[in-house]
Length: 217
Figure 1 (cartoon, rainbow, N blue to C red):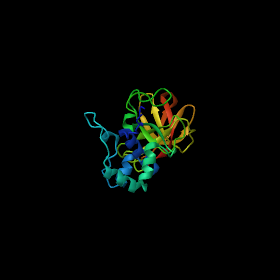
Figure 2: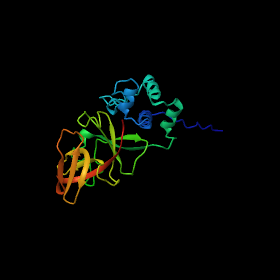
Figure 3: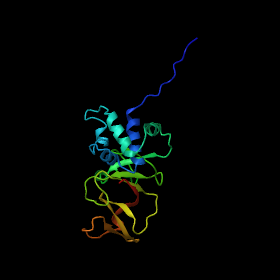
Figure 4: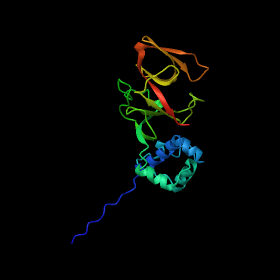
């Protein structure tokens, strides 16, 4: 009689990091926001820290996971569920840094993620299947959005006056602003920085505009 060994489930590097992303989303935070709340260096859970410069996988420490769980008010059982996605309450969306969003090839003609540079971010909800995320770098958009905040952008959600939007021109410039008015000829925008002047983008210069439907705090 031949005995067959049972297949073992192996915990992977990606599973642990995705679970931490899901834990942050569950608490309404970005990964850097979760690290700060846990009393850790804000870059502890950043994607740049997950692989070394020579390509080796870097794992989060047991201590950092324990502090993250305490900060999020979650148990180890909850974390185990996030690893296996037994909660069914999250899904992954494409993520790119806002500073890189203006690079050639980052989006296709319809304003959807395209090309290299995109990673994945687990979030508790998404408005449509085309939703993607952008991570804020720097404090140019403060106090509305700060360094490390993540915004969810939904190309399929209707846009109304007063909505916060991401706008990309055909020249590749990416702007985050409040929609003041939209006509067949132009887009009028209110900057998030009140010290800046209002801006109008002609319809012929516009590549796409999409609504911001969620932001980590």
